[in-house]
Image: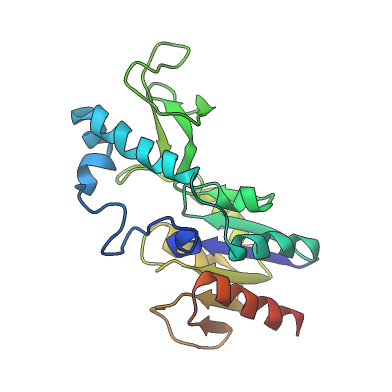
Length: 225
């Protein structure tokens, strides 16, 4: 069974109503990124940071997976599929994907500020005073700017086993995630789906200038043919 590795970014969930990072009306507008997405920002104003992610978490319960999420899940009927996502939502899992790795953390998890390995599932607002078993404040389980991305080594190992690579809804400009496409074996067929791609067609790379819901259907047709 061939192994399809799928790299997804914000464009994957945009059609579900989750705003993307780089859009003019994106979820970061009105917020200084350094204030809400860094450890320093959390230390300086934890209430602001917690409120920011509480809003994101609440929004997650108001949206549903789109057809692209469901189509990726259906690929598991014919292929071994591993999804490596930069997204912090749970839409891949809700659509039925059984093997999704979150590079940048998950909105529905929190962790101890004392022990990074003390991670808990969390579905309500997180406030000051919510503490781990050892008495330390809990924080969003999100990889903030300037922090290590602990899942990168595992993601690299996965990419090295890819028979097919599909990239959806990401600029592939944010490192270290952007480096992953370079770890797939040489000559691996690669499909890049994005309405505004920053790459051109070349050997082994097929660029599909479409949003995720349309683009993944085209890739599935190509795989079947």
